Image (cartoon, rainbow, N blue to C red; front, top):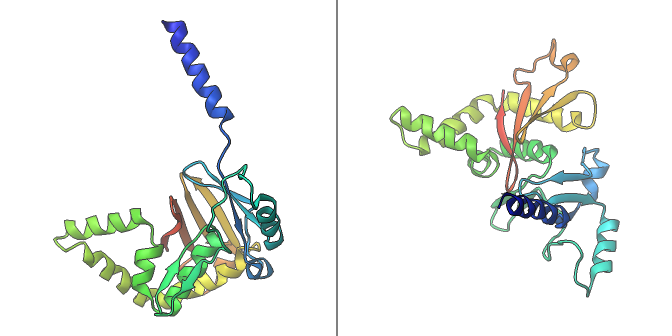
Length: 221
């Protein structure tokens, strides 16, 4: 019986190893490359899929090669040039973030335009929102008061947060910002010591959390 169990376990491992990894290709808008954004070649998503960023030319070649054929890889039929920020005709916005630069850019745009509610609901990590709502309820407030507290923080610290995010939007592709991977989907971006020291920056760190639907804002301090 033990031999049968061991054999079954070995087969399961072998099948898992032979199962091709789901690969999703995403074209990167040329303005990001030209703007000096630090775009990775690939990102491992929480579900085990591999997200690969390609140029517009490579994307066109992939589509041409697979047109009319059964794809050897998983290619989303509705995939299009990735847009971190999309604004509808009614003024509503839809934000997405697959790399840290997207989180920084979207957060900066929301603070600039005072879109605090959209920032809270779309870009702030769900785990952060859940903890904030639980803390509000423990004080005898409602869960909705957590968003009000967030909005108040944004209004109070808007200038300092914008100053930090603006500097980081340029620093991600240089030595003026330091990115640290803490594991478990948590990343922090800090101003380099030579930049932070002796300056007017009151906020110096951005925390980013990876969730199933992309990267989210964990905090600014």
